[in-house]
Image (cartoon, rainbow, N blue to C red; front, side):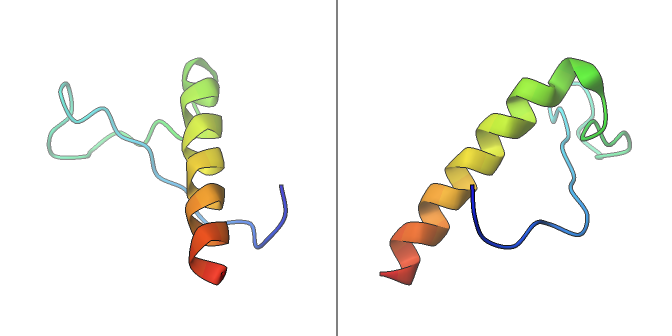
Length: 50
């Protein structure tokens, strides 16, 4: 994966935390979810750069 790396990441479970109080980005249990979002973001950035 190329491109810039984010300075700060946020990941929230909006069903259980609608006020976005607990950032799950560093929680090991959510690493696969965060990787999926990073990958999707990279795809979108690549498409927009064309």
